[in-house]
Each structure stands twice: as structure tokens, then as C-alpha cells.
Length: 263
Image (cartoon, rainbow, N blue to C red; front, side, top):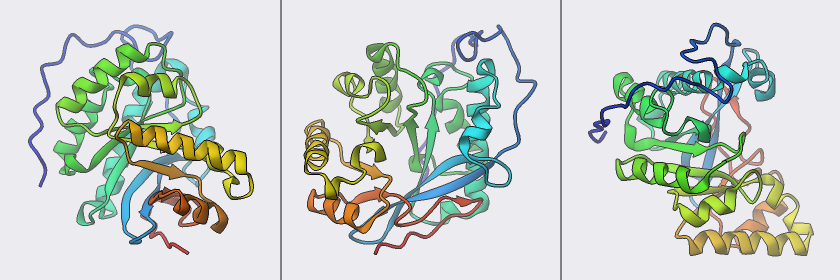
């Protein structure tokens, strides 16, 4: 069942988009793009827990080719447009008929800007008929978090209104751990850069173990991404991880919902 979502009255519209934006800028240009989906799987049951929406070029080109063509001043408007397109694709492909959630990446700088915030996407989901209780917003690592405490306060307010928000790429990126220290997300994802080859490197295995213990201490069940080998899978299983994502199970599918296979 889709819960009621009643956005609070928006403050005056923001006058800027990304840093350095022109006041009141309406995006005049955006590259063509498509949406790919990659599943997050429970490796013990084989159940698809979520499908993560990823931007690709119209012929499957990498995300960098698309995002690199977006002028910095239009970044947040494009991100909002991308999230709506992901909703539309997920609905067209039948995701609401499954039990899986939809994971959408969002720039931390979008948070709190009424025209671009997660609440705008929730309003789009309501209008399109997508169940809002199955949306997960993943705070992207693609820009630094300048003020973790201010962002944490805003994210906490969104969570109290029923939004599910996770933190991407714990262990890498900008201000990941400082943000965790002041905010308790609904979930957290451990990056491939952290787990790569942990089955062959005792020091890396120990670092992953410590990262997972820290997340559990914060009350979070982690998702680990980037699993590519049976050895990495076996090592993470020994550490008690169940929610995983990676090429070993399914590669991103362009405008399709891949079905993961657990070796």
C-alpha cells in the first residue's frame, strides 16, 4: 500500500541550482540519456531487494559520458529529471508488480532545495502511481558534503516525514564517516573500492570487517556493492553480509529489470 505523503508547504523557490548557477536558470540543454537498472539481491534467498536506477547514454554509454555533458549550473535540474525518468521506466517495466524497491541516487546539494529535493520526486511518484514506500534515495558520492551537520538535520527531517534515505559508498568519497557520526540513514552501501579482493588480502578483509561492525553499531544493515568474484562473495558471506550488488549476480540492464543469479 502506498502511504499518504503530504509535503509541507514549500518555501520560496530556490534561486540557484548547482554551485555557480545563474539565478532562475531553466535548463536549456541536457544530453540524451537512458536508464539502466541493477539489482540488489539477498544472497541467502535469491530475492531481489531493490533495483538501482543508473544513468546511461541512449546506446548504453557509461554514466560519465552523460553526466560530463551536463553544465555544472544545470546539474541539479538534470538530476531531478533523471529521477523522474527512472520512475517512468520502472513503472513501464513492471517494477511495482514485484516486491523490490527502487533506489534513486541524489546529489547531497539537492537536499533542501524545493524544486530538486527528494520530496519533488516523491510528488512525481504519487502522480505517476508508484508506491512511495518502496522508494530509497541514495546520497551520491559525486560531490562533497560541505556541512555534514546541516545536511544531517535536513535528512533527518525528511526521514521523519517517511522518506527512506541511504548513504552511498561508505568507506570512500567525501565526508562519509563524518556524516554517519551525526546522521542515522535507513541504509548504507559499502563501495567496491573497499571490498575489492578482500578474499586474497587479510588487511583488506580486516578493514571490511571493521567497516561492517561500525555500520552495525550505528544500527544499519549494510549493502555491499561491486562483487565480481566468487571469492569476494564467499568472504562477505563469512562476514555475515546478505544484501549484495555486483556483476557476479547481474550487470546493469539498459531499460530492463535484470534478474540476479546467485552462484
